[in-house]
Image 1 (cartoon, rainbow, N blue to C red):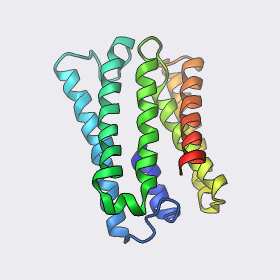
Image 2: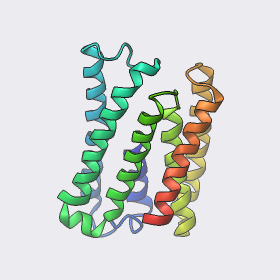
Image 3: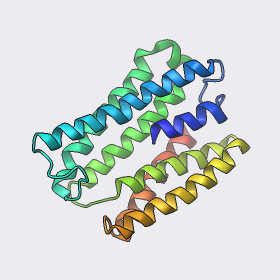
Image 4: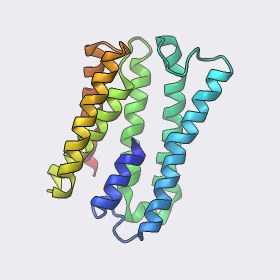
Length: 195
């Protein structure tokens, strides 16, 4: 989700995230690094936990299997947030919004991990809710008409994702609804107060 969200913003509303001064190639390079740190590294970490026997299934169906992978993922996201906010000084000066957006996603994942200590909230719901909430918040706050069609497309895709999770009996409606609400809430707070 971070790669999709930042990719959308990098190429449809680059001035909002401060990357309008960067060439498309540099933006793609940044997206590649974001994809590595927020998708490939966490996925490999979860695969390692599975192979080492710390989790029973890569689907993370059991509540007991969800704790360690989510906190590990939150750690990787926190590293990416720190890296983009403090280690890439020239970039963080012109585009602090990248670190802010990654930070909000880190908070969402950490909250999913905390809630998963006792209840199986939908991480898929949180992810799509965060995406839709961020796009909606940015579109409204900055009057970005370029984001209208992507917002509508991802709203429909989000509905399909939530329906699929329910159809698979992976979650109850309350778990999916709570996940979507959490994602929207965190992303809207971030957009309104920090971006």
